[in-house]
Image 1: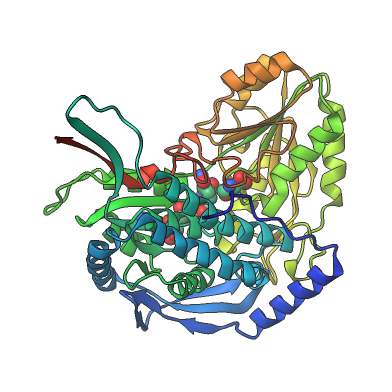
Image 2 (image 1 turned 135 degrees about the horizontal axis):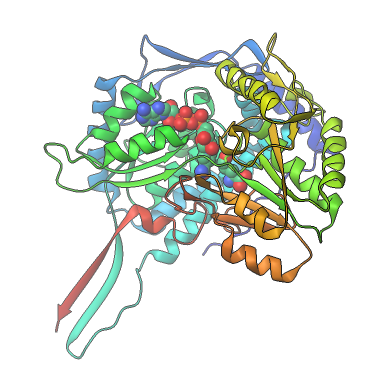
Length: 515
Ligand SMILES: NC(=O)c1ccc[n+]([C@@H]2O[C@H](COP(=O)([O-])OP(=O)(O)OC[C@H]3O[C@@H](n4cnc5c(N)ncnc54)[C@H](O)[C@@H]3O)[C@@H](O)[C@H]2O)c1
Ligand SMILES: N[C@@H](CCC=O)C(=O)O
């Protein structure tokens, strides 16, 4: 019997013992930098000539891992291995499947700082962000294990005299998991184990910037007792391997987390029925955000400024949930803006290895260039009040940047920048603030800072986002506490870490037997 689910606590790095332990983990990871990792297909290790090289975004020259790269031929082999493994894995009891996740969670918990240290190196995460990413990966394993046990007997339905009816969930088939780099552990792990615990088999294609941590996770699943072929590790080009897997007639389920453009393309492709395919593919697509913190005139203005800054600049704004826009009531606009600028100017940016930096680098050169081009756009569209500079000489560092007085329809207020750039608009009143908050194509997260109960109720009805928060920041959803997923072009609102999530990976079956 499992204990009641509780989320994994975050590490307090002001405690000397924790700091020392994390430094030791970083040292041990440093000793492993630059190693090579194979693909894993049906349990077999495959080394290819073509490689994906992942570098430390804060020290461009530092190679973190060199990972073999799958092509179409290997992708085909992996699909066959996953299909074969499905025939037995689907019959393994849900409790046994759940136990694999619980064992894996325990193993990761014992190596928690080591995994977080990999995230510092490979994703450029400051310690606190890396620790939260690892904690969330553990949470997904623990939460989905318990959810599967709760669903194992299906749900109660009615029977009539002489008839016995039952309703239960069955596995779907081969699942393609395509994950992003920004929660290189948590989202990769969560979107891998949800299909596994529900009895499906998985082809895992992690992001090319963060494949090492994904390989380490696959090793843990194997050590936890996952049979060969249930998870297959096949990093590769999104365009080549991604398309091949999405189009394949044996693919039953696709779970994608990433950008809007790739997600939409994949959603369209998955709708096409290919020769040899006798089913419709299930698709879970979680995409970007352009998330807003709204500040009412009746609000704690210090809390408002803190919420805006934390939402905008945590992990350098590289969260789909990032509050990259703030909309402030005109009566308190100047005061909140002044506080936001003061807090922003206190933030430090630099190599995250030593835990004295609030923000590390952005992920790579392409991201650096894109974000800096938005800084230039911002200079045309608004008033630069903080930051505005970047330095890519040794790593990809960008100052936390704030633009004030931006028109609600300006590009800076509409497009996902995915970096430390905050745009601020002034609202005439609360209705106007909500109108601006809703005026993008996205609908992922949002926050409202207000003391006014009527406005809280109004926002609950009218602020059209999947995750709405009051009097706090709009990032940092916790598995099992804040099920996560967005409306509109932010995705299929599948609510990762929530009670309805696992059912999306299964087929409900009705059985009726006459006595
Ligand atoms: N809604 C959410 O829960 C959520 C969570 C995290 C990140 N995101 C979003 O993800 C984006 C950042 O992540 P990213 O830069 O890794 O996104 P991305 O779309 O560039 O890549 C995501 C994954 O898709 C793969 N890919 C790329 N082209 C492909 C193709 N043609 N076919 C199949 N796969 C392909 C990539 O290799 C990667 O594994 C942001 O837009 C962010 O908002 C959303
Ligand atoms: N679930 C995370 C965001 C994931 C996307 O990047 C949060 O709530 O901040």
